[in-house]
Image (tube, rainbow, N blue to C red; front, side, top):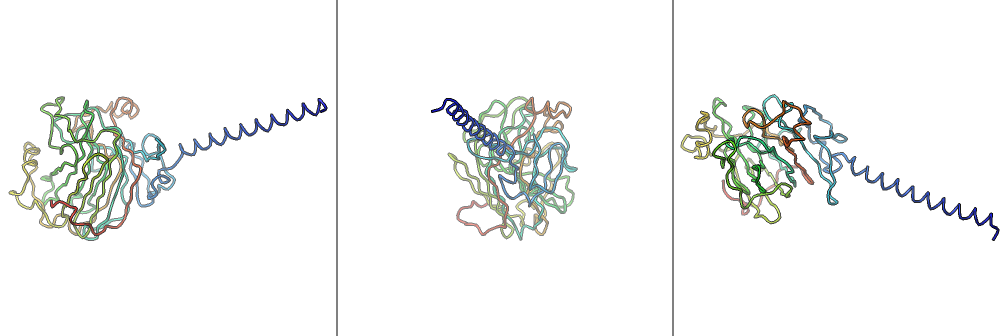
Length: 347
C-alpha cells in the first residue's frame, strides 16, 4: 500500500477514535450534570400542590422548576434520587414561630370531615447537635404536620425525629396539640412514641442525656409514614425495615381532653412550671380548615432550646452542626381513604 495512503488512513482512524472518545466523555459529563441538576419536582412529582418557605426566608408558590442550594435541592445516592430539605437553627421564620423551616405547605384546605392523605418515605440526615436536654423540642426536627388555618391555628399533628448528641439512635414520635377552649395561652402538646421514646423523656440537666432508645431509628435510616384523615378520624401508620410497624387512631372531631380530669400526667409534668393547663373544646378541630406540611421544620433555636446559632450566620451554622437536614425519596398527597380498622389501635 502507498505509504502516504497508509499514513492518511491511520490518521483518519485515529481521528474517528478520538472523536468517539470525546463524545463519550461529553455524554458522561452531561449525564452526571443532568443528575446533579434535577429539580425536586422531577424526583417527587407533586410540587404543584404546594408552596414552600425556606430557612433564609425565601418563599415560592411555583415549584415545578424550583430549587435552592443549601435549602431545597436534590441528591443522588446509591442509584436513588432524593429531595433534600435543609435549614439552620437560626434564620428567617414564619410570623407565628421561632423555628426555621425548609418546608412545603399544602395549597388546598380541607376540614377533618373531608380529610386527606399524606405519605412520605424519608431519612433524617442531621439534627442540631446543641440544645438544652431538659427542653422537649431540643435536638429535633418535624418532618410532617397537619396545621389548622382557622381559630387558634394550632397543630393537630406534628411528626418528630429527635436524637441526643452521642447517641447512635434517635426517636420518632408524634404530637397532638389541643384546640384550646377559650384562651390559647393554655395550649399543650401530648406526645406518643413510635420508635424510641416520646418527647417527655428528658435529661436531668442541660447536658445530661437520658438513655439511648434500644428500638430507635438512626440518622440515615429510612422510615415511612402515612397520615390518613378520613371522616374526621386521623389514622397514622409508621413502618421501617427491621422495626415493628406501628398504627394509631385519633379523632379530630371529638376531644379526648375536654376536662381537667382528662389531662394526661405527661402534660402535667412537662408543663407544670409553664401554667399551660388548658382544656380542649368538645369538638376538637371539627369544621376547621386544615392543611398538610412536609419537609424539615427545625425545632432547635436560640430561644427555648438554647441551641447554638452563631448570631444567625447560616454558613457557620452549617459548618458547626447547627442545622436540620431531611431527605425524602417518595411522597404523595391525595384524598383520604377508608382504612382497615383492624390495623389500628384505639387512641
